[in-house]
Image (cartoon, rainbow, N blue to C red; front, side, top):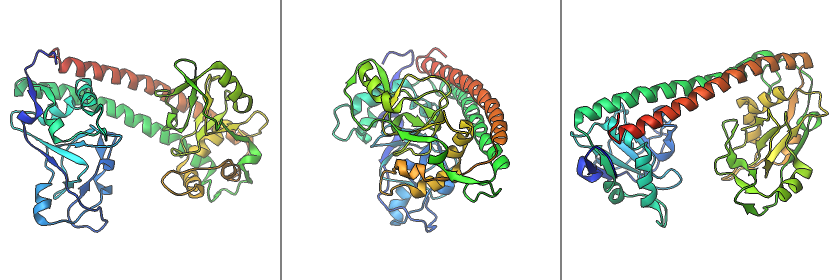
Length: 390
């Protein structure tokens, strides 16, 4: 690893690298919060939702979490994901699918935690997991990680800069989340609770107010370059993520779109897995869909922005979830979607909501652009920080 700083192995600068506690999560308050991989979401932990556990006193003592500890996901899709422990509840412990690193006194924990978010770190993790049967990491592989390590005061200076840049990113992200919630607040204020129909609007089934269909169920031959074929995996938080999308040929694109061509002002929404992440298409698209619901409004008297907010709302999403097939992967059929009973407020109110939604979308677009710039700046700062150029 080329760097202006001397390079140390993690095993040489850590007090310990330990595996977590094997126990069952329980709801009874034992005084020992039980941190698991799934409790770490978007770089944060909501300790109020973390369950408890019960185990022998000696085992609990060995797994106690303290300020400055760093835990790593050791297996699964999140292998290598890390989290810096700050102000944990007294008695909190960590589960067996996590590995805990306790930095030595010569290392600033925040500096180390930032390194574990950098491309230099992830490049090493990819090399260590390639060819592994389970694709995971263990204490031995983590101890061999190479860390660029300046003197402690320099670590603290770098960590302070990255902390401020990261805090700004998170504030922008939070602003985006709040703005997204504002649309739902306006919707509920104008139209009431859509499940109880608290304002007494006329009702109809979703299938009677718009054309509800789905994308292809076939698996066409994929090509290196062509038209994206989107599945439920390409939808997240009401947005389309083209990263990882597979491509199909022009002939397959034409064949699929004979039945399920997506146009501007249509709504697309996953029917499997990530149900309830609808996207209103605001420009003519050039992709096809597979196992994704498609709502079309060409001959409908409904305003697409109103139906989009209806499908995106948490109250109606609960109803969608209740109608889905249980099991490990949720699924909605076209029949489930077409039979959903929805309120029908007057067209002029829907148009008024559309204007509010358009203003909100413009604000979100501007914040999205700012967020992208901040992310790029942060990555640049990381690169410079761990190359001795900050």
